[in-house]
Length: 346
Image 1 (cartoon, rainbow, N blue to C red):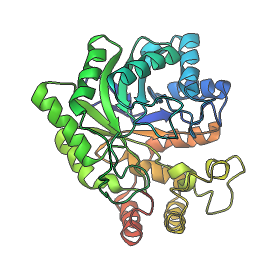
Image 2 (cartoon, rainbow, N blue to C red):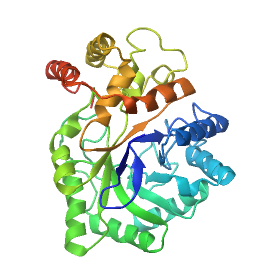
Image 3 (cartoon, helix red, strand yellow):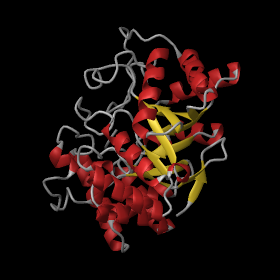
Image 4 (cartoon, one colour):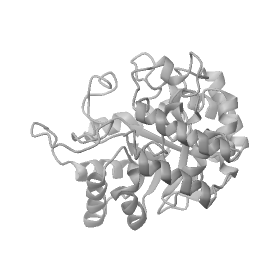
């Protein structure tokens, strides 16, 4: 395994992070524990979860993923061997109304942290993140920003950081980060940190893959200049970048077959780009999954690559991507495809 350091801390984390959002929906508790044991044996020490998980979010499963991690921690006593990251849901919508209705209000943050600590059966969370912005912006599946004059959101960056600071001082969380955030929101949080000596956002967890390289715009510069590490998720694009959906080998229990509404990576352009990337991988003796993950691993702004799997074969292949270094020629071929079909997913 390779390791990096959470920016502005002395916390060492594995370059590959174990993602967990299928646990409790597509994976049982026993399967979750098996994945955790294997990942730890392979040197993975960073685990990502959220109060929302598993996905798709449903009232009857909400929080189940973190509970599975909690039972594993209690059974194994491995808390001191892992770094835990979790998240609080953003402003309410029908999708998350069963969890909470008041976004990042102080009492909501208090409630979210208390409940997550109980599910995880731990006294502290290493990295606590805001799952998505409360304000209306182009977060999920929207290419461009269109201002919503009816958005009732009021600037609360300072209040949010004050609330999080209270929990840091109490020892419930160690550090804070962002998720699904844009350039403006990231800089506003940094502004409040610098002006008022409030907690510093150290990471940003956004989607990043061969099918969605939009992070390489303004956010990549912010990442470099402000030392905010990317925790890259959906690096296999809901499984599209395994090639199984374009070569007809996906089984009935695969993610996009089970949940066709999750169509961000299913467009004709995504499929065409995937076919071209698959050809590059095959001609260079790699699986598409490992090439796609190795590409993410090599990016200088990536602190950790969040992988996920529903079976052990997938998990082993994904973790083994850490041993692959893409040549300049392969990177050139990848960028040639990207130039013709740039960011087909958002």
